[in-house]
Length: 403
Image (cartoon, rainbow, N blue to C red; front, top):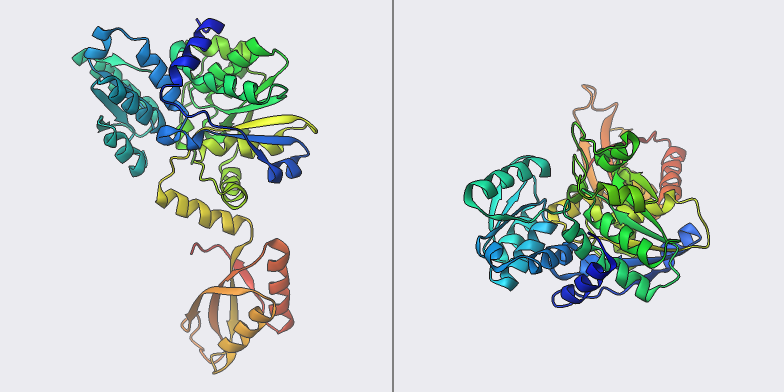
């Protein structure tokens, strides 16, 4: 069903609503990896993610009667916005079932395109079950977010744009949730150039496709746990699984901690806000054991709510030793606080926060505790600040404290 003719038709259809996101060459990631790394910024796409492509193409293939019945889907956010936007363009009613854990921003954006939103279940799979029940009950036309070859064909238009712009691409890294994007991209890439390696990237806490590849059949995880909410899927698509087995060259899994660091890298070096699922392919660059290759990392979306963004930035700064907290004991007498601050300032550290606890001991004259949160340039600078404190007779103990 995923034919070259269908991909060509999808590319023409998707052009009506989608932006052709031009590749961005990354000096930073190229230097880090020894390859030529390009970013495919679908986070800059309308609705903030690639999902608009598959949703719009799928709806374009429906009959007038199917559209008139009303559309329904389940999604953690990006497909929801894609279907809502496409339904609005075709004048259809759309109902979207989203997990209760979906960030508020994604819920509000979906509503802004005129869709009715229902929150149900903790993960995508539970929301999908409820959406399918509603489709049967009310006669709605269900638009699957990934397990539909037509939707996957729409998503695959990304590969056409990549190869058109970078014909000699060696590797394409693609995020994997249920497998729709990786199906479309890998299938079209192999049609156009079988030598291109297409690597799927999953969060380690939701690696349903890797488990399925290992078992040789579609496998359901008992539970998923990842900050990459857009790829928190328990079961990959059964209809598209044969395409994935045939065309996907490998799967890389990425830990949540790597996504946190990748977010900082992306913001600081490219001024791009990319959601955790979209950062999978950036974090995976360090796992590729190749040099001198042309690699494209697909940034699948940028719909991250402010609260999540704040948390990720804070954790990223801590992991990079750009922010750290130490506890020191000092006598409770005038001038000690100034002395500690002077030592830190002399080492070019910046005090972000102080917490002075006089009640850590019943003998206040002997010792009070001072917790100091300090901004540093990185690990080496942090160690330099701690050494300076030690040389002044303090015994700094690093502690884990969020700001």
